[in-house]
Length: 222
Image (cartoon, rainbow, N blue to C red; front, side, top):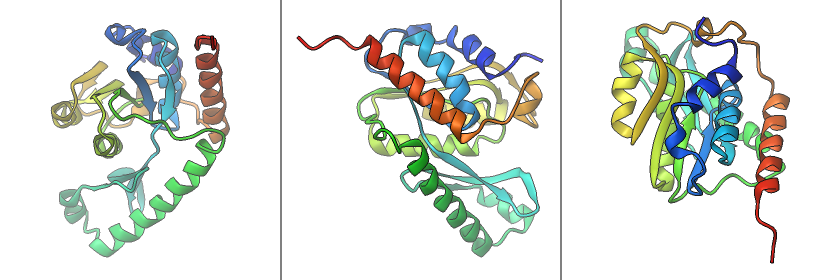
């Protein structure tokens, strides 16, 4: 396996992002849950703030491995209409599934932003991080959500990506940084020796640790 776990993947990926180290205009924005473990290591090594952009996959009825779209914070919805037609998933069903995921996004916003405000990413260079992209649906929705806010630049950073996802997403980012690129990726978890489930509590703990780390680096008031 290329990666021992997500922390190892984050460290490997950070070594390819050194051009962004120590810059005051950079924010690492990770997709929970697994992407936060990767993003935590990147933010630590680049000395950058870490936060989350909540994205939920829309999966095909009866097959949770088949992603047909995604929903993010800010109300962004991305649907692979061609795939839905091929699978025979009706517009009504897609709408019902997307509405359900939108409600889950709202719940997660209360969980993850319960102790701090959502980040202000306008005019900042955003490193969008996940633990891998296969179809790219979640990352595509995340890019759209960030674009709506008006960042200075978007950099996509993932340990592993499919050629198809790279070809599409690299056109929408200043840079697409990866450790491995393959086709097909099948399941991102296959690239990790340890791909243990990540809980909401794990995400909150890492966000808290990152906030504490940032506060300890902040200059004292004169």
